[in-house]
Length: 135
View 1 (cartoon, rainbow, N blue to C red):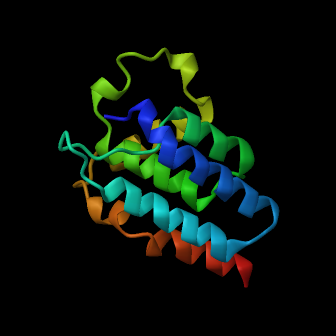
View 2 (view 1 turned 120 degrees about the horizontal axis):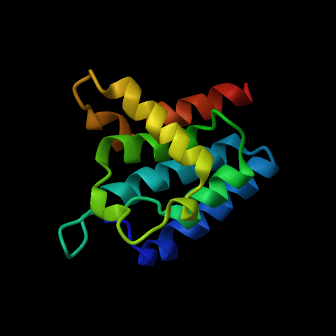
């Protein structure tokens, strides 16, 4: 379940990531992205893992360009792991429209594929894109 309490950890990371984007610091962006991956792997007391919620996602979508690796990580997390309960209390307009479209597109691509969670368990795939862009 994605809960608002996740803002305590994810929202500051999102804001830091956007700042790093503004100052063109790919290495720091990679470190923040790795922190998101690590955060998503934590198992909380209720036996759940938490992913970035709407506030964090909107912050990143508002502060980055299409194709950004953290955007892709968020999309992958939701395309692979989302539960209906995550959306029960929300209205459609509460969510970032581009993010929802990106998730829908990713889910359509994966429909015929076997789910592979390994992609969202390792920051290396996403960080590699950031560091290549810096060169």
